[in-house]
Length: 114
Image (cartoon, rainbow, N blue to C red; front, side):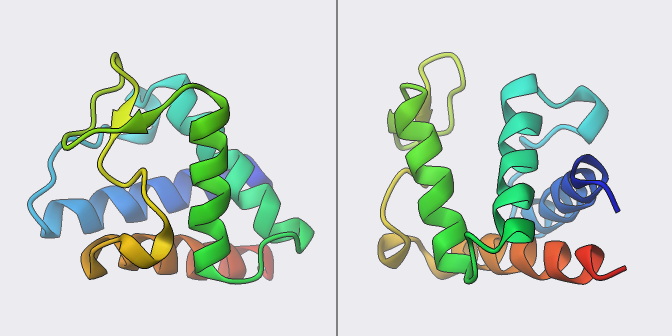
């Protein structure tokens, strides 16, 4: 499977999970902003290449990308301000947010082998 298709599956999995925890801010893949789709593809490529071997590393890679593109911590996700509440080290993430990294990693791992 190509990285972009796996990224789409990961995105939709994340969107469904977010809805179960009361976060209805995620748009479907086709409506998601370019930065979000690009970030998902990069995350998939990191796992497929073997650079990322644990969900924690997936988050840290995401965090590094956010830092490089000017994002910072904010209590509410705001793309215009480039603020995100998950802009913290993995160990400081709430458990429900760590689940998103575990799901992303599991979906990539399962799909890359398909």
